[in-house]
Image 1: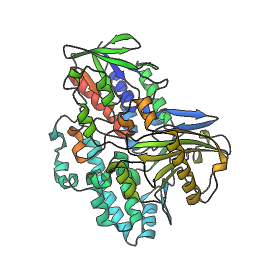
Image 2: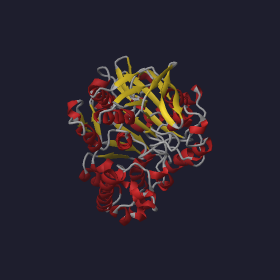
Image 3: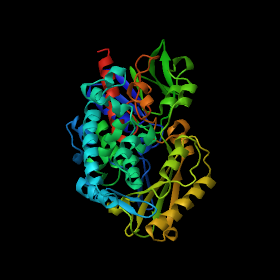
Image 4: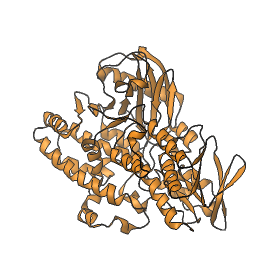
Length: 486
């Protein structure tokens, strides 16, 4: 039986491991941290439960397809609830509520801009077509050739790769609040809306059409489900096992070194940070230079706070976006002139509002995220300064006092992304999905220098986000199966 070693245990690594084990390979995972999950680990403290990383459950169909490939259902592992409303957006002088169906969302758009409801329905109908093409055609291709992007459907929509989300949205909607609401989902793809191809409007369908969901117990329930599935399929998982070397001889991978021991394998798949993975190779075996990585456009990093409150909070939902400052200015300070934002937008998540299991009785679990440029200086003083800014604005916009109710707070920022995930420049979401970094223009799933060495995750195909990570694991497993000596 041929053996595969997988480096890392995030979504893409677990996905690849499951598919490879199902295909008949012997699979072992080596994870540097003490628990599986990569960026999607969990923090539990004083009865509070926090998802350290991803906190939005979008595109439920992708998760359903993943488990269905193994004869399972998501409900075999976790309970999924649709959030109603999906989320709230706080502006300086108003609050926009995104409901759990198109009719409610259209009503809210009409409240802010007469006649916008019909424009929204047309925009989302086109976004749904794009979603179907993207998910069922484009993203299921391994990014080996430009021809993969050429399908009957994409040829008819070629202009959408050269127009931007920003242009498409602003053509239809004039109210700046509606513009920000429609431009926000592509921030998950890691680029400014003015740099993201309009084809990616499929994210708006994921948002408004498919809705926002919550796995009871938090996003870590998906990791636990995938770990259980992997182990049922025979995958062996080693935690506290950092890889110090990918072993290569005569341009062919032989295995990995961990804790001073060599572990041999026929194939190695790295789901760790791609740049870091290449530093585990001798320079002659690396595909990409330091200059290459330096020139790439990265999705943001994040300043995160995990806060336990000793009371229930008011005037908020499970997911909340605070767009009460200049959206475009903050985007410039991430992408164009990287610096700590002067007036940051931020996101606040309170899973205990819909899921009592995530906080002690009469308490609230709070997760706050400020998107920032990767590679910034990260000090305790800066973290505290931004925490104070976020709390002041949060109190003002939600009209309540909360600072005195804080039991504890933990933070996570650039230095932690580097230290815990070997993340290049401390990025949180991988490589941005700009036109020049789409599909075959991203770092390859398959090494061009070392035989039987592969990569998966958010720095390769198809891109940032949890559903793409699941797909990335499937794509790399398909490449290995086709490449197999058997």
